[in-house]
Image 1 (cartoon, rainbow, N blue to C red):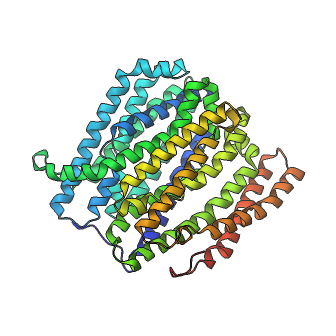
Image 2 (cartoon, rainbow, N blue to C red):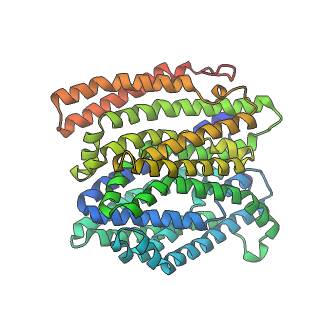
Length: 497
């Protein structure tokens, strides 16, 4: 039972896997996107606030408790260790993920009173027990995608992920059809779906991988924990960075303001799929190939990362430009006029979503410098809090998404310096394709602007024309970026643009 290596050029294998997983995740997120559009139209703004705050609570709670980060599983399985040790790593990851998530759910039950009093939303207390159960089933299988990727079972992972995303929409439509209490019915049906996904995930992992508890090796467990703990700390800090603004709004503003902010701080789903896919695929692949003493290998890895990054730019920047230029129409189309006050927040956060797609974590983790991710995360968290406080007392609520944007820029610059050192690169420009980024921004703007003027002149307020203008601008920008920018990237590492 050896982990399979990509056939042919291993670096081409990385790109291929990133592509497959990105398509899979994009389909799943498109269905989630559709789900959100339907949901906001059938529940009140106060119920939507409860829903988003419930998800926020379980995100924070389970990130704090999951010390055995599942990223460590893909790292060790990719090392070509003996079959029995692979099974031990898998078994201990599954067992401790379930145990820790059970503790996390219990903690939410025990701390219910304190959680409710901290949020400006008394209605959250009525649903907290259900969200605790929701969180257990969702987070106890966080190891599943990493296991399936390293075992080269991407198609099975795609089927499971997309199927349950589709079933969630079906559950919501059934809830709407039943009438009476759409929100309550949907919460219960979604927990049932998560339970089914929990069973499927454990079945896929457990068919031939799990071993009896008596066969566990505590030395392997210590080894995994030693690797996983810095990643856990960095993941916890990154989670706080991703949600500190939402926590800040939850405790500082009434519930309807949080509902508006959660729409404004809306991650572009198809863009975030790219960043997550790069991180999930590249850690085990680079862990196999990384050799800190061979400059040719390091240059190949950096060049592959740059090519993936430019491909991300060609897709994400035209999409982000369309969303910024058509922001008010997009919000009204997707989330109704109830959330138009999120317009300015949404424009700023589109830039934040772009930065999340250019993740350097895979390169740093594969080089064994997880502690540097912790340092950059702390720097990012401090920057985030400082900007949030300053913006609240100066520019006001409508500009609060500047906090996450500024913090991401600070952390990314720090991580670039770390990668430059770990991969022995001559300059920061050898890592980051700045010219390609500038070209994609300019091309996306030029391609989108005529459609923006046509929409304002002939179709302002008419949804079919809005959709056509957005699609036309995105398609023209995508094709132009791909033809002009992507093809200009040199095939070898000698040229850095």
